[in-house]
Image (tube, rainbow, N blue to C red):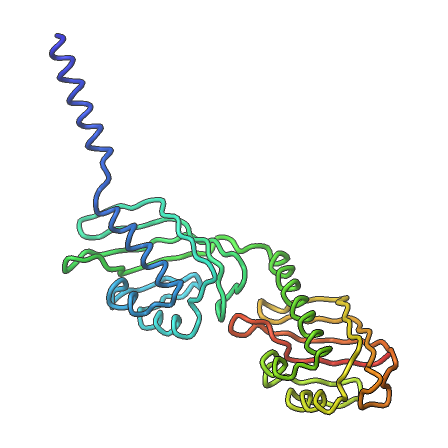
Length: 281
């Protein structure tokens, strides 16, 4: 009886140990999932196309559209698959012959031209892999957005970014740094200045060089901030300015106040001032 009990115990222990062992295919798929995630972050088409992603791969995208590998290539090249961060938590891997399903959660922060740029986006995913020719390739994917961080959180983040850019812009004006201005402002910027003139970037820089835009004091106070979508912001408020005594203008040395309204746009991951209107009060 004692021998029977010991034999039964050893048998059960063997079964438990066997069940506890991890399928070696699972470790390989976790490795490939991580390679795919990192390559997507880098925009590394050499790793993704033909190696990780099958040429026949289809995707049910978070944008609720069905895409092919060719469409995915275009999205990658045009900045529509760009991420500031991308975390993937695998919760389940199952196998059926040479097919594997990988399921879990992804937490991303899109950037550049993606929808929800700058926000934290949580989604559920299923990746489908096929083993053929001695390697695993991804043949299908489904991703669904389940949560986007509250718009107010994103709005506050954008306000902080634009406020910082406005402070930088004030320094450029006070130091008359036309080299930095040329880099900072977009070529298609349009300004209606306090003199009632509509000018562009080049004309503004010419006025700086001519000593017309020359200040000893230039301070902005934001009183209103609003957003239209994810990539357009409207900033309005007041300015307190004092042209230097030697400025090439009629009000040189005189302090005065202005009201201003500006339109900022998000382009290629950077906020730029596109439109400005300022009036002396």
